[in-house]
Image: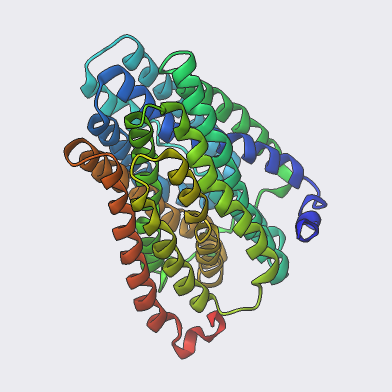
Length: 400
């Protein structure tokens, strides 16, 4: 199975941007949990922590399509460097606001302004789309590899973030994430040979990528998928604390990512050539079925860990399928923007899931918050079924 991915590392320059992307995205996977842990510890409210995270994610979602369009127009390096400096400054202000106990409302300014930075995941996928533009099988493998990378970062990130925040000081996970993210960005953009060329202005489509048929429904599915992620992050922290085992939250979230990563590895080597539309419906249905048992765990940490391992199995295949669909329907000149729009849906969903589940935790009970994830999965399945009717039209027969 692993041999399927070996050719990716033989591409000149690929190892550099893979390494940079891994470092930066591991740090990125820390930010959500690190923020919740930091705010909840300093301010004593999961509802406030979820709200701060939600506002930050909404800001990230608003910035992302604009920055994606700029990356397509001017190139990855020229956009990533100045906006990384901007984001780093506001990360520092967020840490100071928490550490020095400045007014809580400042967090709703400093944390969202961090979000003005291009998405490394979409830039990496755009590089693979350029490298394997004429090799669909290898491109499918590369897209699968990217999603597995994302899942692996969620094995490393949350565990490390919770450990640092609970053993050192509440801001420790956030600070470490910011530093690692900076290192990862520098390494990533240093791989200039794999950066996609900028499409000349006169060859670019005149309309925004969100006008591409099918892109908005796929983004909505990602909103619901993100809501599952956001819910699991906030609620798992709350359940672990209620059970008197706050340190267990990181490993439990890591198990969710492990299940997803293993499924992604298998999926990447076996699913090429199958109907993307059918795979999308199957993936969203799997998210509902596999997430539902988590509701039965209550505050039993062992049972929760067991259920969470299986809950992640449908996640990576669903995300890989969505990214393959985007690559099929989006013009080359708008690839970064198109991918960013859909992944922005994921970000919005994380924000919504974090906010809603945080309120449910504070007002109903910790374990009840997982109900938000199950409902989100149901909406994703309904949209996938509706999207299926559109994507099976004759003019989109290549997606079947």
